[in-house]
Length: 57
Image (cartoon, rainbow, N blue to C red):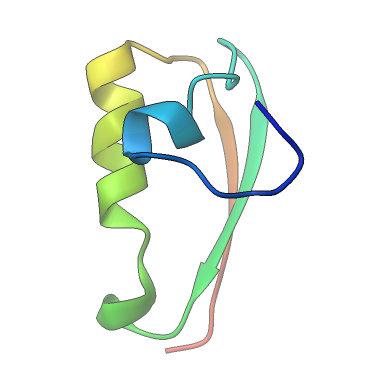
């Protein structure tokens, strides 16, 4: 993935996330949850993830 941080879709955004990776997600309430990225991870079959959530809402 290039370093410009622009990707075509959610699948491209999570393409480098490997099984057993640690992820930090943030947001504010339900509107800030990265649900599209979470679904892309599920479709990709990523598993055994360690997820840290910093949700203020």
